[in-house]
Amino acid sequence: MAIERTFSIIKPDAVERGLIAEILKMITDSGLKIKGMKLIHMDRAKAEGFYAVHKERPFFGELVDYMISGPVVVSCLEGENAIENYRKLMGATNPADAEEGTIRAAYGQNIQNNSCHGSDGPDTAKTEVAYFFNDDELVG
Ligand code: IDP
Image 1 (spheres, helix red, strand yellow):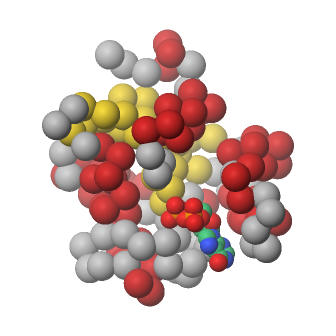
Image 2 (image 1 turned 180 degrees about the horizontal axis):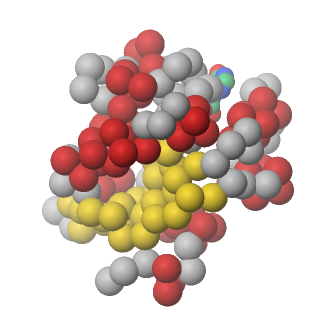
């Protein structure tokens, strides 16, 4: 299995509740390695650009408001099958449907405030990492 990189966000609901360390521990315990990381507070344009694929969805405005409501931790994660493995570790979008042992089951509050984001495929992983990190902000 190839080594992949994926993109992660610890979302505002989790940062606000002091859960950065707990979620990072779940990530690193799963075997994923952190290749880049920063704490940022997105402005509206940055969040709208990030979620542009959802702009026709009814929840887009609220989603953007939520994502700019406080700081987030963005990171680039690396490991075997990292994209799929991190999606599994996050659990279902709606925390009520997320399996036990997943980040969203442990910490998600509702379908919007679900504590984490992870890229859904190789193309989005590449685009999303590049949307937040310059090459010199990632370690080899
Ligand atoms: P994912 O984050 O599990 O990949 P997506 O369908 O790509 O899920 O949705 C992106 C984000 O939009 C979700 O993580 C969640 O924060 C929010 N979201 C998804 N569906 C809903 C909804 O029905 N109502 C409100 N927010 C939603």
